[in-house]
Length: 127
Image (cartoon, rainbow, N blue to C red; front, top):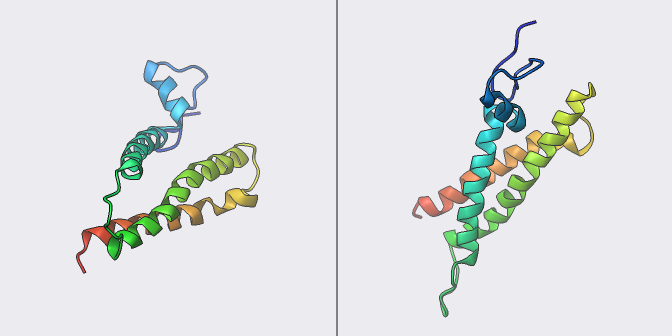
């Protein structure tokens, strides 16, 4: 049996031969490590935006208002997507079909990406 390598596929060997193999197994392949780094960067930038001081007397309107509304949608999605993905992966690893709330992983991720792109576009495109 040959080891299967690729995104999201850990080494299928009895013992890791390289030190990096342990990290690959822990993070579920390159995709898991990328997800951890992305989450860290996103949390850092979101915390700066949330804790930014409010200017007194300035009313939030237009694109910024839309951006803030969409931030609630993609913020929740960025929390739920990896949780639902882990639940789905656990079900697949047990030989089960993906069922229950874990089956919504793909839909939640799609809505998250759409809301994230719309939030970026709402402040990047001048209208």
